[in-house]
Length: 121
Image (tube, rainbow, N blue to C red; front, side):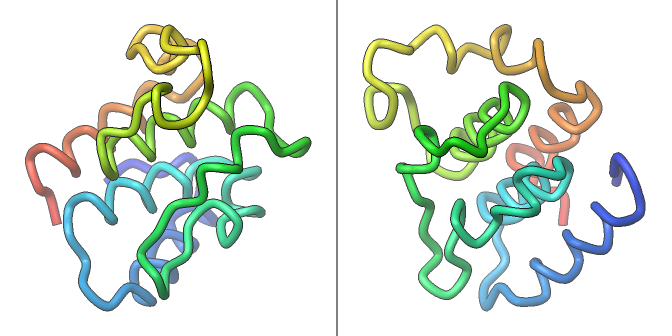
């Protein structure tokens, strides 16, 4: 599995270890969020492991960067087919693969898709 650095791999393993029932949806979400310093820092604000729930309010947070927004968009899409209709009014183009992949590490994106759709555990 590809990680941008050792701390991302450690973070991923720690968070996955906290999940009661690991499935391909949760694993892909945590994988994506583990590979960005901003999403790692605000992980608990983005995803609640105990409740297995995402926070849709994160898209308006002042700490978001272009890359972290796209990491959240990708993670949420892989987790539950979330689109702009559910989150960001009038921003459907931001959820296109082209838009998301412009500002994230392509290797992370591809690995996340493999985890989600090919159920790599």
